[in-house]
Image (cartoon, rainbow, N blue to C red; front, side, top):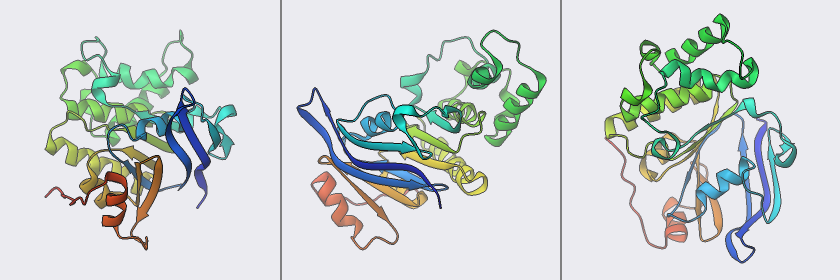
Length: 249
């Protein structure tokens, strides 16, 4: 497998005195499905912002698709889905197809008319997320789970190699969460898209992901089925207490 993300000796501190991450090393291979979990304030979202070049590390190196993040320019290969509540004003009068096609404007041109081939691509990805019948609907009129499927389609429309998701199931009902996880599993297994997802749902992500990165105490510990360290030991080190995983039925 090719390395799609490489983090070497990375540390980050706000104002150079509040150390959040200390000497983190982390590699993600193409085609993996990786979960990132940890207590609130542990640095999960900070890590994603560093990976995406939104924050500069105090020290260390980040490479995305083999390119240093400081000079990275292949953003069409990177998808990002944030928490619905944090990223979207549901009263904004945009249709589903408008929301998805907006991610094509770097290719189309901001003031140019969208062409038939572009709209065909929009409906191609809407079909992937089973939302092709909702193209003319106002996105604000959809349920939370449906909206997140549209945001997945928006990320897919530029044909990314990797999609980062920052707690995308917050505020979504349990049934929609199950469907959302199943969708991500299909994108990973059938389309070979690398998935990196921040979540608090430890039970579900340990069941779905190839590996899970536990962030806490300024450290990052990766655990997968082949790890020698028992998961309970990792949880105790990151969270401070023994935790029991609750899988959805």
